[in-house]
Image (cartoon, rainbow, N blue to C red; front, side, top):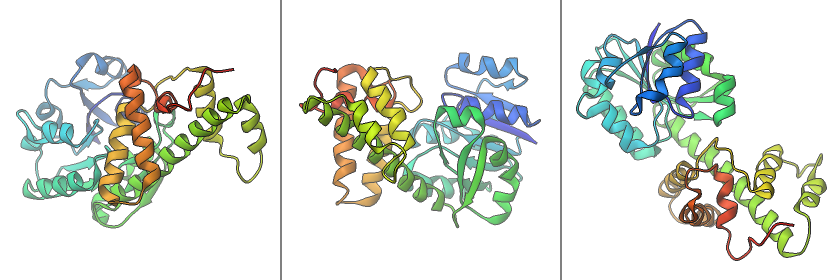
Amino acid sequence: MLVAVLGTGIMGGPMAANLIEAGMQVRVWNRTAAKTRPLVERGATPAQTPAEAARGAEVVVTMLADGATVETVMSGPDGALATMDGAATWAQMSTVGLAYTDQFAGQAADAGVAFADAPVVGTKQPAEQGTLVVLASGPEQTLARCQPIFDAVGSRTITVGTAGGGSRLKLVANAWVLAVTNGTAECVALAHRLGLDPRQFLETISGGLLDVPYAHLKADEMINNDYPVSFPVTHAAKDARLVLEAAGPGLDGIQATLGHLEHAAQQGYDHADFAALYEGIIPMNEPRL
């Protein structure tokens, strides 16, 4: 299978590497060409434009920051749709929200190209390990064509009906991740406010029904003021906005999370891991013990 991967950043790079490892022919394109070099060293073919990457590819995977970027890469000057033929499939695996997903499905149909809406759950480490969860939606035949790709990048594929179902479920999953991380940050900040070592909070919940392994991971980053990036603040804020846009009023917790992310970005943490939303909790966030 010849696969074009458009976007080789934090997520797309490891995903492309796993496709190569699975024995597929892989073409890669990234706006910053240097990010494709490690993949070229592993056997990928570099492309100068999205159109060049997509020409003759059986499946074109988009793994890009947001819907506007996907739109430019697929439909703008030198866009990939212009060189995809009727036998090709577009596997849209970025998190772009509902409006863009519907738009892209329509653009694919207009171009005579099959479309799979297949965002993934997981961050940098699962992407590197090939253990993402793929939320696949679209026609059965289209998903079957993409299944070798899903198997290479993920440990599980959950099928969610017609195109758009995957993106809806991804927003729900992201709302959970945002809520857990924000709740952890507020508890760490509260422990500091009350003069406690927040590690005692983690010890208290450890091993019981209230325990969440992800909370330990993110709390350690907050306590140590060390945020190695696996999911940047800017991307998390974008996803929070997509959740709120889709849900309408009522998700006050996600609204608060977005406020913390935006405040953290204003303090210079925009490209840090989104656990840095802890730095946006004011006035609760006080000096660490």
